[in-house]
Image (cartoon, rainbow, N blue to C red; front, side, top):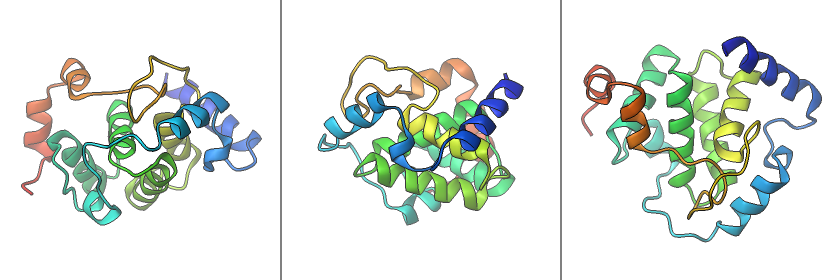
Length: 165
């Protein structure tokens, strides 16, 4: 899977004129995110709060802290991390800008095709399909804490990378 994802990322960046621009996203994703742009968000965090791991979500804070201290996180967590930035931003383009900034600043794959596509996939549905429509996300795939609990031991992860805010 890592090899396939890497190749997809390289191919996307090579053949897409502006790979990190929202206009490069699939039409269905742009339309659905625009349709839900005015949806009420449960929280709004600015870049400074995100960078300082200052959200209400201990999983997200731990992921951001791991990114800052280790330069990486699992692909599943990067999806969760970027999707929460979408959920907590005024709109998708602001979410993409913040996720790319944080990824480029702290991640080993910052300023790399894999980082760009990871953020574009999570926020703008690149290399994905439309899902059931919901608030804020529209038809872009949603991820939750419940999914994290099915994928890994959340308690251990937070104990390892979590911070007190």
